[in-house]
Image 1: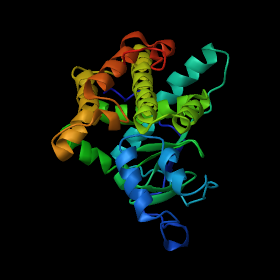
Image 2: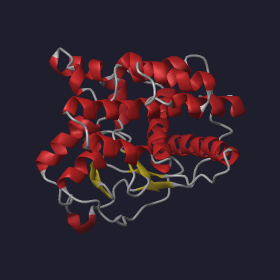
Image 3: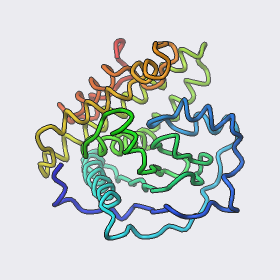
Image 4: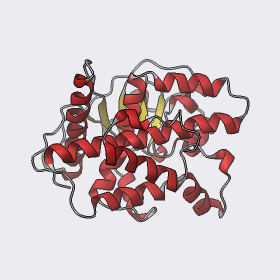
Length: 284
């Protein structure tokens, strides 16, 4: 990726090394965390799971430090976030709206959120209660070593996907999906709503890449392949086969590898948010 000309976002909170309030991880039981780790890995709205165990919490203030000048990964994240702000700011402005950008929180281990206690093992996630994206940068080592999905554009795709959930929250899509999940006739049906939500976030990540590259030519040879490889690596079928040797489609919550690649490429190819309606198509 070419990020030399990209600005660093000022909406980054560096909580790495900060103590949890009260010196403990909060009021979520281990069972709830275990469910969250399974259901939320790589980007699921944490309120779907965490709020089953407790109500939506008030945002908790945690001491945050400026990004160190000698921390290239943190600066990379800040530049990617800045690029998403510029892209979505223009898209919203063209539609006659102002874009309230999310904050991105860097943390290590665990951190309080308005959706409950965030754990590094959850992977990156977005909390609609405080409109913040949370990431432990150790996840990028997981992408490289566990999922064999290295590369800076693959890392940027992770952030863009979470920002996609922010867009869904702003547009009211997340609330509608949560209501639909609660009234679903079966767990499999409820999971299908989650799949469509996740695939739309993948498409929105592609929309960002389309516009960012058009504006500043950020993509280099091999970048798109990196993102596609990452999308394939974290498909439900790939993850389940890696964990247990077989896949159970009714339990999918994010979409298959092919679906995730398809919808990211859809956004990347056309750059039109209106082409990301995963809820109106019969075949996703």
